[in-house]
Image (cartoon, rainbow, N blue to C red):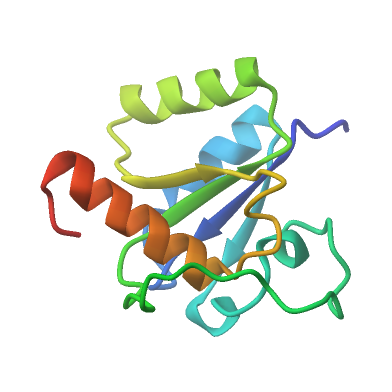
Length: 130
């Protein structure tokens, strides 16, 4: 079975949003659930792109934020698959405000650093506190 990419699914609580892994399975997308104990690993390691012993991570200037909300990181999905997945999330009323796409710039960030950046951007754009 050919997979259509990977989604890193950070969930601070084990039973949070059980719909995400189900939707991934329906779309033939690998879902890698990530817990708080993995917050300081590199995004590239979690996605299986970088080896575990990779050099020090680039970090953001933002102070570490408590990671209380779920987050999705889309890795290797085509634009079409990403759009389809997001449309299905919307149709099913699955809300995950913190989302990112794996890039060459964030591949060597820790999950915690990416979360902090996205949380800050989300708050600045929407005025909503997460």
